[in-house]
Image (cartoon, rainbow, N blue to C red):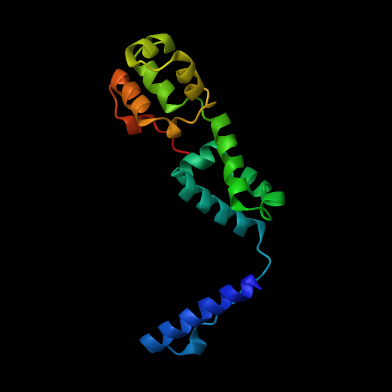
Length: 162
């Protein structure tokens, strides 16, 4: 039913455009297939993840090869795309060596306890952000500002791309 509704909406839009532009209707009749190939799903899922994570295609496949994404077709093609996104987040987090916070802290030659003292953010919180036990993207703005100030960087530099 849902596929039919989508088809009807697309058809109606297409007819309106054809009429407005004077294009003969017979010229463009799309063919819809219900079954999508593993390759089609892989491309679609990868494009969706690119959009969702703000990572480039190159960054994604650096951490998770396309063949591995294609191998996720079963069972992910039947699940909500958010399940795939969550799984990809886990895979990329495992493959990425350091968080932005840890990279900037190392560049500043600071230990976690030194950063805690200079920023006023508890050591345990810094550890949790660096180990991805806490999501720095959901940190309070005040904490991000204090960390960024101590590291002499912009708060957005500490935010993790998904």
